[in-house]
Image (cartoon, rainbow, N blue to C red; front, top):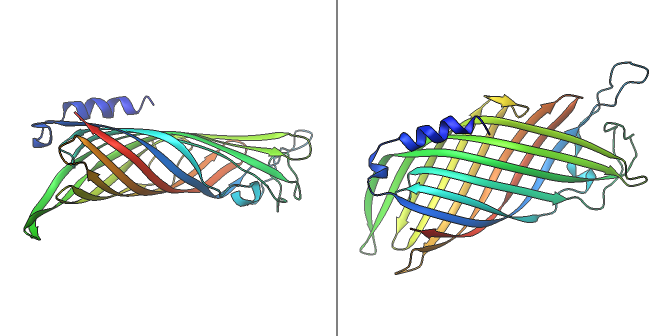
Length: 267
């Protein structure tokens, strides 16, 4: 979180036409998401011996893969397309009906049955500047197309807690990290309808923490603004990858995907 503070200061100091007549948007939304991928945890050595590395286990063995929903928040300042954005994304998914592990996982042995609870809080701060735009006509109404580019800084706290079915013993893996992304945004607006697509890429950079590797983040969104009101309804879809490695031979190679349903209030 400390790494986000300089970014917020820079965004506040930005002075472009984007902020000539700033538009403020507060957007609560529900993320209906799921978590897939693999996780591993080394088995501690006995008698002071070295730990034994274990093969990554699919999250589906821990009962993960079903969708869950969480309330998230987003705040935008800009012209409705370009500008600054702060996003608070929350994930909480409890696995169910685990199956036998194919290899060890921490103190769990191969063949044990366990379920996993996943929790994550993610803060993203970003800025997109409009770099190109054009205006066309569709059914005698203007169709505006825009391209924007900028950067995003993401800070994450992720925990994966596996619990053995036979005795309730737990194995908890915690990962955190701050990662910078380069971002590209495409937008189209016609009458009261807007379509946006944003892709962010972290090329293996980490400011700190356990999250590392090449990370991808894609979000698609369709929005409809109620005529004569400063209220917008939107639906979208997000796909993000997370790679992390922490002490104790604990790793995670995850894919997050889900639907986004929400409302934006402008003021």
